[in-house]
Image (tube, rainbow, N blue to C red; front, side, top):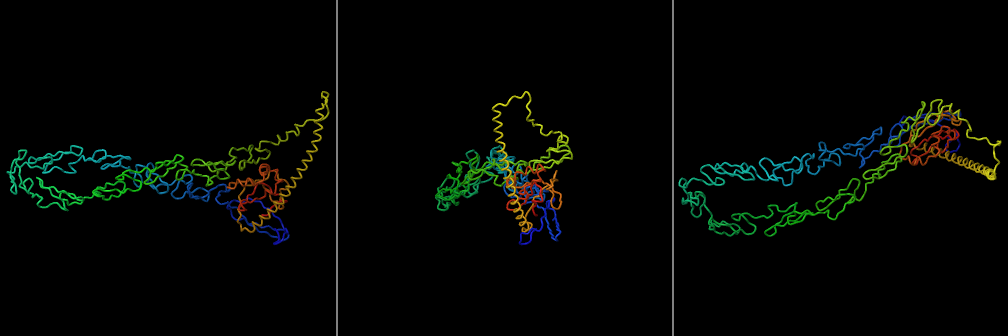
Length: 599
């Protein structure tokens, strides 16, 4: 603590403690004998998109092609409405949509496969041209009762549908749209239309004569201008000018025949002929009169006199990477294989653009997929799983294991030591010092005299040893000077961080670490207030892991494995800021009072 606007140091304080993520504010008061008083508050929060007691769970909400989900307070994936799957990338189709005959690309959608129709894709599609038929599967044409033929267009029940027999005749179906009439005794003919009664019984009208016909039966011979079985109907002649719209009349034995002018038809030319009435044009073309005929104006994508030919727009079009060309009406499109897109399927989908790999994992682009090469200590599809090195119980003889990033540390039970707590004090004491040293001097009787080569070697070593000692002394001096510069830089950095913490309104965030007691704390590890000095190991799972590991001092691994280095901690490892001071990471070290950093 310093006076405002001055560089006078009033007091220095070092504080280490365990703080739970998301816990309440911790308030502390510090008093000095000179009447100086300092009150501070602190708490620990996870960085954005990280959850859990150690901020080790990564969950980033998204709503794109790779997933549609949000995150629960515990960091679990919660799918948005209408989506399902491990990463909420599979849409929920319209309720009731047939899963075998339909699919969907977005929620509450039901797209039918070929051959199936209906809102839920549960109705088969009949064969094109099927008239009176149904289907049990796509492209069937199962004829209804009374109909037959390939397209169910042949009436097998002609009698019921048309009732062709007259005068009380009985109709019998003979198949393929044919029938036979059984006439009552007094009628005959294919439809029982001829009466067998003689004109003697039913006299002819309008002066008709009852004479035998060609079959020898008596029939009425009607005078000109009349017709019918009894000459009851008056017949028109050309004298009556029956032809309308300028048609010419030609007399016939049976009456007359009208020759109609262009554009008219019918027995008396009363009907105006329309060549487009029969809808001769296909595929939505427009029919117009052209003289005595018609002309079809085709829609784009069709040709022919009746627009019956679909133009193949895929001719000459090549879709890349196994894509298939689909012919459309006046156009085409490429149906791309999974993993490709573009007008011609020329672009490979790069799933690594979304940065799916966590914890510094390297993303590799695959066909319609990606692969993460995780850093040591992490696993899973997106490197979000912290590998538990303690799962194999490496610590022996009652030692407790602490999981670390790509490693572990054993807290041995009393009486045991070593990396995995396998060395007892007896074994350590029984190891003789200098077992590999050999006694020099005192030649035995069997020793041979030194040769000239031995003498030269001894002389060379005698000259090299002083030179090596000088080089080692120079190296030690360089190392001490470097450590001194690092200590000055660390103090300056700590002062800058104090200023940032004091003026930042609590904007910094601290990633929670787990702490453990030093196995053999050096005297320098005790701070000015006799607080229990603790070593901690890093529990880190952030997107900036790669940059963090690159920034940390290489000696961090030694400090995390051997507590004997607590007394030699470098002040450059005290506290570092990532990404412009937004997140503070506490690394493995002890804080000697000489280099204590203000907080």
